[in-house]
Length: 231
Image (cartoon, rainbow, N blue to C red; front, top):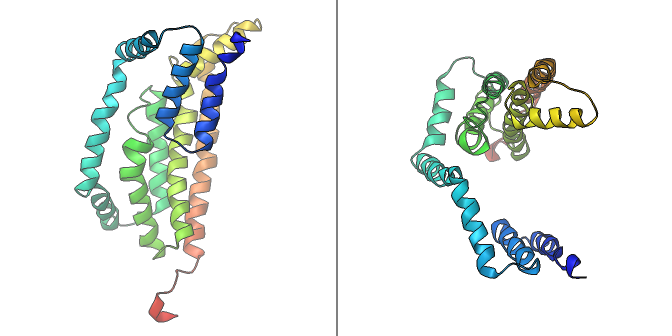
């Protein structure tokens, strides 16, 4: 019975998320519960937290990056990004996100998966620029159209990273795939897996790129919402 008590930590996670509590507090409480019920002393559990944090010090970089992004946004980073797009002739939402897709895939293929991302680039730069480009070619956006533009910006980052990183031979996903194939008797090198990831990345680029351009075209065909005085 005592072996099953350790699973109480899972129950803590389920209940905490169901009540929409702070995820960090929920996971911490779950870890402490699991450790204590597993026979560890409370001090030993806290020591394990400190030891893990000390061995992974790169996590503390987040506390440097986030305030910097917050300060940049406070002093008009998003507004400046919008002004840059408004001053560019021929800039459209589809073309902008297509260029970002190329950038994201190429950098991910080189192993530079952290140079961009939802927090670093999409929210402060890419999404405002895409929104400004859509308004420039289409006019004022409805709330639904605005949300779709923001969602497409985030999706572009995800597609570029997901299908670009597998081209890099030293990425964790490639090593995981290699290990799974090895368990079934297929001895493949990381280089072989990376080479076969290239056609998939190319297909992903053309498929998502087509979605971007078609979405951009559909915005142009949609009548701009009328102002209150015109109704």
